[in-house]
Image (cartoon, rainbow, N blue to C red; front, top):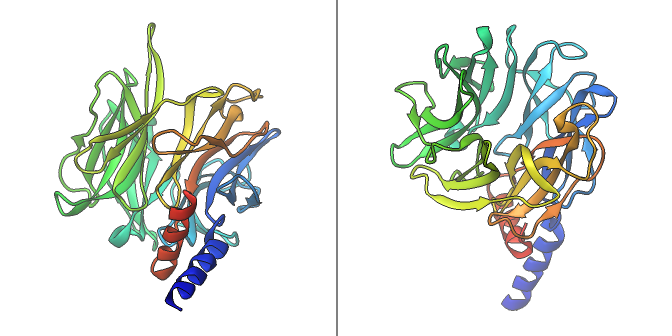
Length: 335
């Protein structure tokens, strides 16, 4: 009787949760300057336009409970100034979270106790970017002020077990040399930023922390007279130990346009320029989305069209018992 009940439970999980893993991403348009946020299944099917707006919508990231998307959007048609907005993951009314006259982009949700906070990049005077952190009530706090020689972009929040506090990992660019290094700083803005970068010869940016907070994936690249190199690196959080380096293969080789984790953290979604799709105006016009295991195997193409698809991020499962069922089904299917 117990075996039968267990079998029925397994069948129930497989039927209910297999194939329901989803991700959000940005889709551009061939004749439009207003990209929109889409949602689709993890196998690349059932695409749905979430934002459906005359406003430009980009850089989506989903809250830890899987219910809300944070994204950047223009405040007028055509999008003269981007602010951070929230929208239900299934679409609906959007809510403006940030205000001001400076561009804001790349919002990322925190996790656990920081699950109601979002870190984002703000373009400041003289083209110098700074990081801010904001809660869902709209209270924003300056996080970094790098000075005139540096610019801070693309950040995410993690929990440091070693220091027992939340921190932010981010990319800092030297304005003159354009070299990109990964740094970390306390999420409350206290203390000095520390450098995480391991290889001084490579540029490192686009860090994104896994849903369970244990790993970080980022883009590593080197473009010189004798070396052209671009890869996704995965490291453990806190001790920054290299877990994997994925060198992507033809037709997806260069110009990574976004990295995201699947809901199980067993796979990565990577948007990258593809050699078999002809661009129209911008480099992103050639971007498509691929799915792969953390070692780069089981490589699958999810999108295939002549408009850009980029900045993919998996939708987390709802916490509690639902999260357990998602993990159970994903463990069987390998999603």
